[in-house]
Structure formats: C-alpha cells, structure tokens
Amino acid sequence: SPRIEQLAWWLDEAFRIPGTKARVGVDGVVGIVPVIGDLAGMAAGMVVVAAALADVGIPTLIRMMVNVGVAGVVGMVPFAGDLFDFAFKANTRNIALIHRDLADHERTSRRSGIWLVVVVALIVAVPVAAVVAVALLTVYLLTR
Image (cartoon, rainbow, N blue to C red; front, side, top):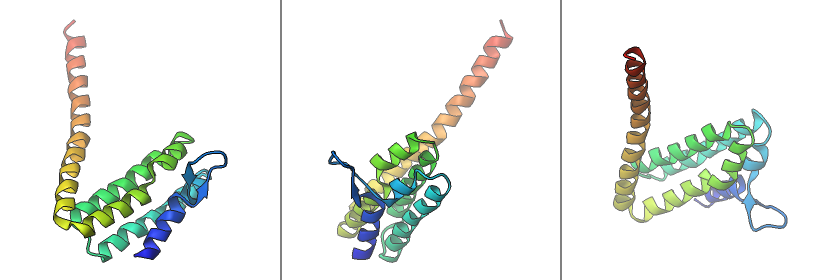
C-alpha cells in the first residue's frame, strides 16, 4: 500500500544528511534519544502488520520480524546501534520483501524459508559451540 511505503520512507529515508548522499529517517533521528527512540522504532511493526493484511507469506513475515528485531536489538547499543540503524533500514528492507512476495509468492517464501533456516541454525549453533568450548576448557583445566 502506498501509505505503508510512505511510512517506511519517513522512518528510514526522509532526510538527506547534509554534504552526503546518505539518507536517514525519523527512526534514525529519534533513535538517538534514549528510550523515546526505541519506542518510536516500534512503528516498524506497522509495516509487518500491513504485510500480513496484504496476505504476504508466513516465511516472509517471519523474515520481516527478524529484520525489525535485529534493528531493535542492535539499536539498543549506544551510538553504534544508531549508526547500524542508519545503514540497515529495516523498514525499507521489509517493503522490498513485501513487493517480492506479492510479485512471486512461491519464490519469495522459498528464499525466505531457506534464509530463516540458516539464521535459526546460526542462533542454535553459536550457544552450542560456546557450551562445548566451555566444557572442553573445563575438562582441560581439571585434568592438568
């Protein structure tokens, strides 16, 4: 919907940074303000809701929620999170996902499904690797 695209544009790209070609939106500008910025970032959820109403596939919706989640979690890191938000542009990414899904639902759902499997595998693998590393280190230290 044009209104959702306009919302994403306002959130991610409404203002040009003087002297550059880079753009930042209300989400990035307000994101500098602690707490208020994080709350304003929740408007990104409206893009996901609009996608659900437009009958976008479940894998694509989950991928969109991951985009919003990544932006929210990394955005909590002072300063570096704000720089990440400027570059990542979760809303713009999500609008592109909506367009791709509506243009070719099967292909987008398949690609999003593969992407999600890789992300979930990494989310599981990292803590498992950490536990194994700690266990091996503990055994090594105890048997010295």
